[in-house]
Image 1 (cartoon, rainbow, N blue to C red):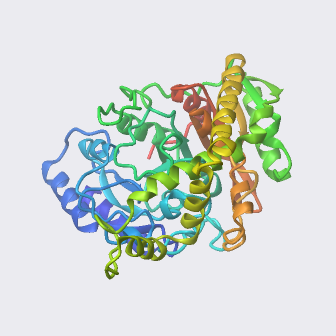
Image 2 (spheres, rainbow, N blue to C red):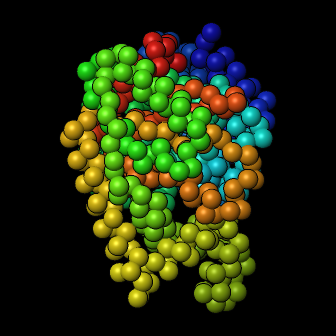
Length: 454
């Protein structure tokens, strides 16, 4: 099959799907690129002719980028994110922009202005979020590879709920240039694929150094070439706090089965305690919402995005645009973040959250001195029903209990399929030391078996 035929079949699968995985399709340009590849024949590029889906929080030159929000419904960026430049330089074909929670704020992809994405395993359930469209598109076989972003679990959560592999990279490995910011100090772009080799292949491409992001170190790649199914001799820590109240017994059993599989293959494990993890959820939401309230101040409808009739008063126009342009969850987080940063409350909430963040990081550092990897459930339960939690913010926030601590510490973590409960996927989360993505992926590869690359 030539490249054009493959791309045409990709769009057929997407257009026939009822999952609502994509917000915008890049069909015309993708077909042109495929035709050019067929004309040129064999050429260089590690992703030459491979269709890739992009979370709609990552800017794409000439392609509408909405962040799943009414306020950016018609926004067309004049530049590409660094990761997009990397993909195009390696011959990847961008097929479209995937659905997500509005401005990455959510755990279910239900806060999207364009409607919810459905879980391919059960269309009455959520795919997870905020990168739900990317994970569902991969799980449904619409595309082999996709990019998401992870602020508090936004790659790992949908990977768990959809039964695919999703990697939250070390903070600073992948450039955030061109990622529409939710919480700068927490979020990272990362790969989603059906297999560990697929994730490694995509990480090779997107982790190139970028001088435009001062927080990024980058890497020279080599993740796929060095991918070996290795878990023998590794010391695994199992933090009890990740198996606490609220974790479904079926999820706990599936993860423990994987831990025992790792033991059978030569690893050793020890149950440990990380008490400060108990405070991670509160610290995360204070920090994330505070950063969001600052980041989203730029969306005023004056320079780009939604425009409404001018009232003659800047304050009234600004308020009217934001009231209509933002969804309820985004407004809620802006208000809570503004409150936490306001005079009289900055020290009471925000500074305390930063101190807790330091405690959590130090606790992870201590644990990872004694152990090579930490194993835990990705999510405390399987995918929940559409509409079940979206109107109960506290319940929705509690769903992030097992993922947010990793973002506070800036560590890498991968979610891989660990089994099923009543037909719904369960995810195992493997956490490692800073910039040791290779070790994490090698262990994940060993547990998932010798599967073929995409």
